[in-house]
Length: 206
Image (cartoon, rainbow, N blue to C red; front, side):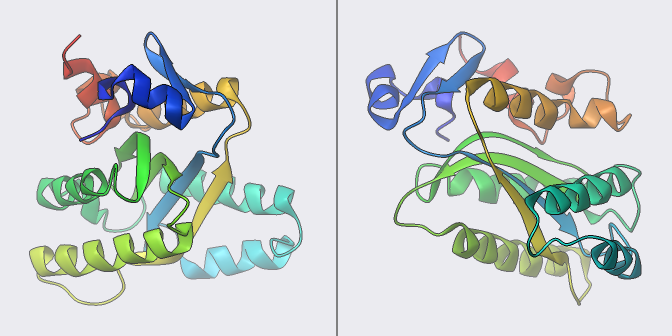
């Protein structure tokens, strides 16, 4: 695992990152992205199609962000079968994310929720985000379906991504990601949720 806090400082500086205590900060050389994936049944398809008809997500960044916010709010209410609440599936997803950290991207924060996943990552130049997400979704959907003894669509076709603008935005997104289980009423403290960067950070060597 190559969480930012665990990397040698010299390597961090070369990559454009430097540690300032609790959270890493970004100085602008590369672009981290806030990415969200939802399970296929976390929001009814008919609801999403209605929202898309109301919004111009193809041409408006603002409308795309609004659609993402609506889906996020809906997903936080725990709709669908919430397959990721099965610890076997949640652990597999987290392990897959960490396995590619340092290979395809640098992973700064993540959380596996019952019906969606948030992550903050900076992809390497040689890897396209769409390819990374397609590979991740393909691998994890097959493994999850096998574990759960089911078949059919596992992930929602789309994923949502947003570039991080600056260090302040970076810090705010990390806090949002790691506080998601508390916001959803699943746990009292972010560091107690075992499928998250907050859990790992709280237990890492000082």
